[in-house]
Amino acid sequence: GEGDGDADGAAPPDPAAADDAEPEAAVVPDDRVPTPGFVAGASSRFSLLSCDAFDELLDQGFALQEVRDAAPPLGDAPTEGQVVRVRFVKSVWDGAQDVATALESVDSVRWVVGDTASAVPAGLHRVVSALRRGQRATAIIAPALAYGELGRPAEGIPPLAHLVFDITVLEVSGSQDDAAAAAATP
Image (tube, rainbow, N blue to C red):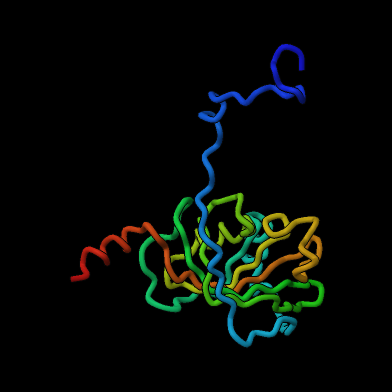
């Protein structure tokens, strides 16, 4: 442009703008551990167990069914900014046929709760925020909080699909329980 000394006409970067930039999201390395021997494509009968679960799905975008303790639950539910490590089986649900088709099984994966820049569906952030470490649940996530109108066809998730996760919260970093356990360890 004229008079700015830049040959392509673009304005030079403003050093003050860097101070106003959004902080970068916390990065958790992709440490996904697939379940050995898992074969995708197995289908099983699945339906919501109650009218309450249906109402939760409509009102909150997700519903929890069959919350159970895989181990004695510890601490509070994870909050935004904490790192969770979970185990899950992810399925896509065809509610018209009452069938869920398993897509993926992961023995261990971590992510930062509330990190909207991650590939984790928004509904899964909400699900783990409703569970304590050691709890296992079946969670149904509505399309708006999963992969929406586009889906993820390459992963077997069609547009507007409901997802079902059989999920267990294995660890929550930064919790008061972690600090207490570390202090109590000789």
